[in-house]
Amino acid sequence: MMIPWGGVGCCLSAAALYLLGRSSGRDAEVLRSVARAGSMKDLAAILDSASKVLPLVVAVSGRVGSDTPLICQQSGMRGVIVEETAEQHFLKHNDAGSWIQDSAVMLSVSKEVPWYLDDGTGRVYVVGARAAAGLILTVASEVFEESGRTLMLGVKRTERVLPTGTSLTVIGEAIKDDVGTIRIQRPHKGPFYASPKSIDQLILNLGKWAKLYRLASMGFAAFGAFLLAKRALQHFLERKHRHELQKRVLHAAAQRQAREAEGAKGISDTEPNSKKDQLVLDICVICLEQEYNAVFVP
Image (cartoon, rainbow, N blue to C red):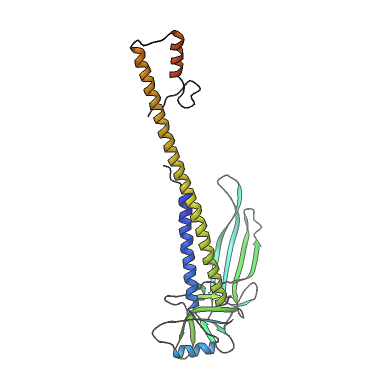
């Protein structure tokens, strides 16, 4: 039996989507359990009363700020995280011998300065935000510099930045040092987000993805089961057909041997009847209309 790879692939995809749905659902439940600080002032009070043993994962919102912001070279925007990339665009031959456009990264630089969230009641410094989920950098500028050469088309330079003044929600572990500075960093185990969306929007978005993954998983599972059942039914019918064909051929062969044995014993009729019997022996056992031109070998 040939393996129905289409059905197997659909079932494996259904399992993967189911796991993704469970993961998104767990992430949404984790975010629901996160403590929410109404303001930076409230966060300081929560930290003073919180346990010193267990890490405190909180969600805070405010505007991005820094005492030493970066200034983008091309756009002049101020930001706290700046990523600069330069791509060389050129023409090359493909396997078919045609000219195609391709690119290669020449330069990729990322810069970050100490920055904080400010809501008017206090500041909370954010550490390691580039590793946070949901962080989106704005495209500050995108410039293409033509080279003027035949094969070298030019260089594309792109600046992405997290501008100062951006409204941001950060979810992570909150700690307070000896001088009273509050920082939010990636927890050893738990969520770490830096997103322009509020925590309620993040929870809603994760819930939607979890539901979508589950529905897609059910669809792939049903289609995969259909393909597997269809292939199994085809295999069963093919085996049944081969068995009936073999049984029919063997029965016809037995009848022919019996007639030949009777002929050998001298039991014969008139000449017209002999030709009729010979014609009956030569009739195809499948269609029962034409003379056979092939033989089935079991």
